[in-house]
Image (spheres, rainbow, N blue to C red):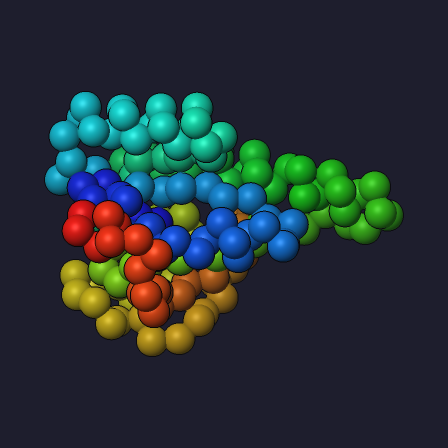
Length: 162
């Protein structure tokens, strides 16, 4: 979950490495879209979807939940492949498991509450409110809320400047 204004500098550089060894797919939910210019949002959408083949949804977790339908659609589409694989192995399908990760204060808990359809986790407009991992069950989703994750070191100075 990167913020829409500075998405390159609020994306953890190790996420792709974490997902590579797991049977997981990445879905990007850009938050705080009201703070970014529309031209920047369209450029980020084309870069993520066309260049990186990563589904993206632009959401506003606080004000009306704008974009939540797109986000649910992206997450459920990613979960279809996992449940098809489970069925081939003779296993029952299960709810889609979603880990909501990102930098502090980008709106992870607000997005989780919107996905759940009700306030399930504490969410405030300040960093440090979520202090531990917390699973939340919602219709069709098992959601994992996490505290903000800041890399121990930045890979390149270009990201540090942004």
